[in-house]
Image (cartoon, rainbow, N blue to C red):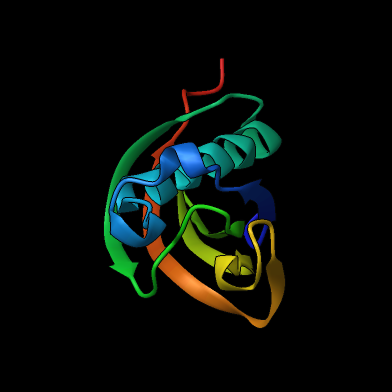
Length: 126
């Protein structure tokens, strides 16, 4: 099932703002990568699997409270028990508080906020 792609969409609540300017820490997105990787493992192997490593994480643009994110996982290599996955987090909507308390806009094109490559492992088949 190489080339399997799974995408999650997530609204970032204001309770996750960690820094000035409503910035969200990078660990938040890494957690989302783990969530989408779990679905990849379930779809491929019928098991939640476990993360073994990240080979590369790049924080390319800020993630802020009020953002809507697409978290994509693409399987690029399949071993006996390992799966190598490329991850991309894109900001598809962003709040615009300067235009009103609940103002927001769709970003076209989306902004790539975080990318990573990771390896997950699944238990051996019985």
